[in-house]
Length: 514
Image (cartoon, rainbow, N blue to C red; front, side, top):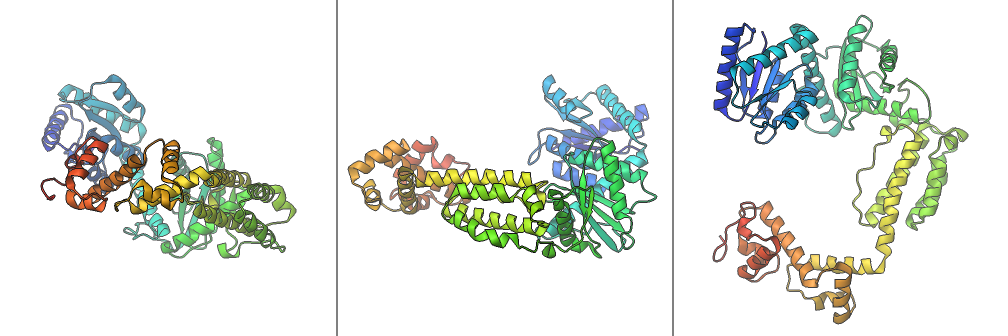
């Protein structure tokens, strides 16, 4: 029997749809099970993960998550489920776009019996043409196992509380394989499924595919013992992928004895894959623990680290770039017989210096890309080059005198906005005359001192009210430097074009606040 799930935040509509499906099933003999219903996208996804669903009919407009969000999630985890949009929209272009994104068809409210019957028949025909029902559900079951394993392993990587341990991993040996491939995740997953079906007699008995916290493809292999043949199995898969137009390579960990060792196995596989920066291979087996990566006898990084550190401290970007262009090249690595450990030392040293300089420049710096995510030395060099460009621009901006003075003045205002400060106070703090500072401030910021101060105070007031909707207006006024509620309310309305009471259901006013 085919299982239909109806998702809509209107419970009456769900009941009506379920009754219509029951009627259509009785009249047309469609072999439908009694329809399931859910009120939210989250509830629907949980139901799909717990029981087989063949056809999903979902509304578009729902609280928290939309029907399109649900469709995206289901399409990723359960690609064989037939997706039907239920909507009041009659715009043809909108519906055509939905169909292009993988939706089988759409139903317009109010749903007519004949239209519902035709679409259910279409969905059933699609299911039958793809796979028989048992095989389709087996594929969906595997997708659910992959998803559960990915969540468990990624929680271990992040040090977060892990969800329930995935079932079905019954053998004593575990291997992690991390792939480098430009193939989209769902397409890669489909290739693994197709290959595992063909190679089942020779391959490992349990496979779980997912994406790690860096969105890199990971294959967890659970084997009876030892792992003999794991490398050959992955070589055959990479050859299969190449035949299907996808070039990929992978690094493979040593054998682990428990799934809880996944972070160590993942790290080993990542470093094995990182060897692609200096070697050509399809499958690379981890030979050394990450902390024992091979290094050249010369200890190359120690020789250049002091020079590099001095260049960063003096902000000599010309010298920094020269070192970057010299060291992060394959020619340099091969000439000095450098190992992966030397490259890791260079990477760590450069990363540390970049972080320190960004901190000194008070620059918000994104998290530096992980070492094992680079496919080549050229890619690593270009990445660091881009970071250096940003640091150099920030450094030059900071050294500009006018910018520095304005930055310090605004910083002073941000530190004292809740006090009774005036432009005279700020000018004195900057060691400038009142008249000169007034003209200078407006020329540089294109606003008056009072406008700038009001902006700082209003921004802080808005933050306070959003963080604590129960806070009293009187308290907010006092905290941002106003002596009277009236003056604050007038300034707030002038700035935001709305009274404090109209800000997202914020605190009411009245004499003395609430």
